[in-house]
Image (tube, rainbow, N blue to C red; front, top):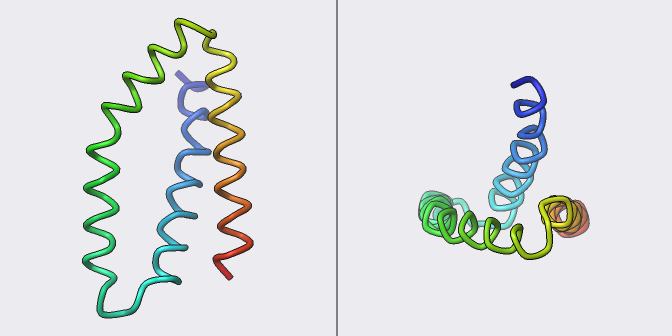
Length: 85
């Protein structure tokens, strides 16, 4: 259970990066709309991502799926650092 809890730390950090970047990019009067759209799109994409992640995991293995997810997270973080400031 402890390892599962620790595995969600990067997801939380990524959420903070994404929402911080949205706050910096968006106009003040559009922040509510943008956050609503981002949250809604994320909620709609979650089941599709779970299905794809599970399907791809059976084909190429869970280690490669987790590794690719980590690499994508790092790329998003680097883009947030580069373009977010």
